[in-house]
Image 1: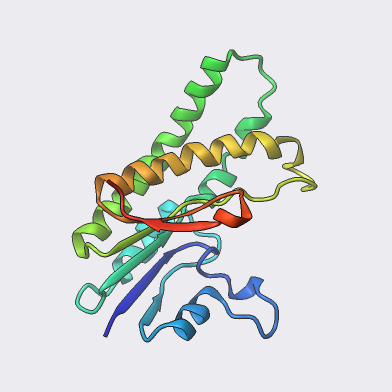
Image 2: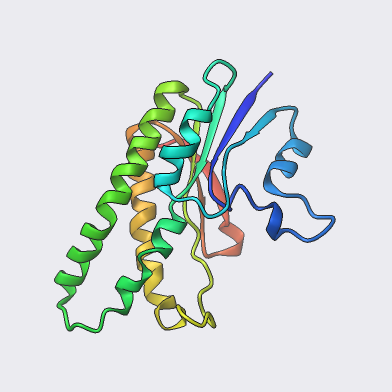
Length: 184
């Protein structure tokens, strides 16, 4: 029997966002497989929350696979950075973005390291590009936010490669929405 622990945020804990009669991620997975799923993901959680509230709930004796989708809420919490009105060079902006993402990167790596030590069957999910156009607070940075998502997804890819995790990634193209591949 395969036992899968689902960690992260609303990408996995999405029951509140689906319409009546539609399946949540967990329900869809249960419907499509004979696996048992341990829902640890919590809507609104960040990398800090996974470290503090989810990792210790993974049943290491039962779990055969771990799935992690986290980081989007960390990025949302830092989108104010894009509203900075101070004139900066492109180099300064990129340097600030790297500094801003460094603690998130460190926490993400800590999570993946912990999960991969518990079980080598690990699936990491990238963060999708949310549609911020028309949002009352973020509409003016909707396009620039895509760069932040790309920078974080680079962290996911590099971390996944380091720990030989499987990667599930999103794409702006509808025909290439998700793929799972083992890093080389």
